[in-house]
Length: 563
Image 1 (cartoon, helix red, strand yellow):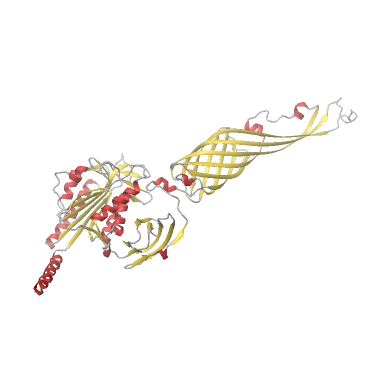
Image 2 (cartoon, one colour):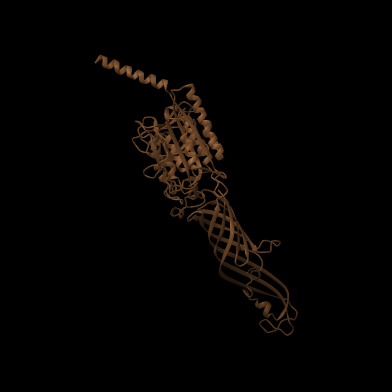
């Protein structure tokens, strides 16, 4: 028994000495290409995704900065040159320490199609790229490819994932894993809401600790992939580009699994208490979404994060919302518990992954639709109406109820005094972004002759002027004209802060006319109780009439708004 214990101790010592003599050295090539050529949409976040991946690998993935190469919008030659440079770094390390174990990680985010990676005006063929990756002198090779498709606010990235690259029989790689953002028939998508690719965003959240299902403080390749798969599926299930299913091809010989990240390598960490439950949204001090994850009660989660101040919001299983703040110091571990969270107003539901829904607002009617404008708004609209009026409206308030001031006059009469002005209230709510509906109710004061203004000859009869039996020496007119306007329109917003508007209106004009005439009766005209009147004596005659005119019409215009 004693000899057995001695033998076991000797074996453990030998294992430790062997590990010390054969340390693991990790290397990284991370490339992002926003520009996929003139015929492809310019991506926004491929380069930043590559930078973020490199940051996590150097913070918690065991990659020394001197062994990491990050490329921004490289050409095909530059990408192959980066691979060759990393190979030289690895070869030099092997010469210095022949027993070193090498593990290399390659990340690419950008455009691609069935022919290969789209790097500006160039295409780097799949076979050439595969051979370059296969040429790494390393025991383990992990490649992460985030590329496919084409799109708009939720933009598709690249083309179709190439199955030959993942499972070609000619590939003789041993000890490799390829993680791809979608399968061969789907597009990969990026989002303005998270400022990155859905797949990479989920993968990085998992690598920071959200994917650590065993609670051992380490995230393996399998854990990271499974977490990214589930989260990407949920992010993209309601996007216009369609649901995105990440895929993988792994051939790692041996026991266990390759560790992607180790939380013990981080300088700071955030621990979510075991009693917390819900979907958590963690934002940095600038309001950028840093991580998003689902947490279940009974499981503590620790996230490796840079030191700094963070705000946290959580949607609980009861659909109520809670918020809190935390500051993480360098080389410290901050703990977030239920006592740090406070109840907050419930948020409007937003279809996950649809960036146009990011313009949502909490409106009474808008809860039934996806809204397009959020919170306080200020705007300026210019309308042209069928009856020849042009309107300029300035408004401010909340989307569900805003106040507005409007000025109107006939087209072409800018040199004259204003014909009308007034104010009212309005509301707007979205349909399917980027469309929304507006409804306005206005009361306006009009000046000038309504007959001329509306081209309605004979709207008012002037019996005194038309049938007078004398000479009119003085005529005074006082009019009080009001217009009630109900407007209902549909708006199309191709960009966030401007929309083309059009719709119908119903006008109700209430015109009240008061005329005062001073006349001198003609000779022989009699008046009065006894039938006679002194000749040439002035007489005052009053005329008063109120009329209402209702008419429909259509309008078109443009609206500029901010929030």
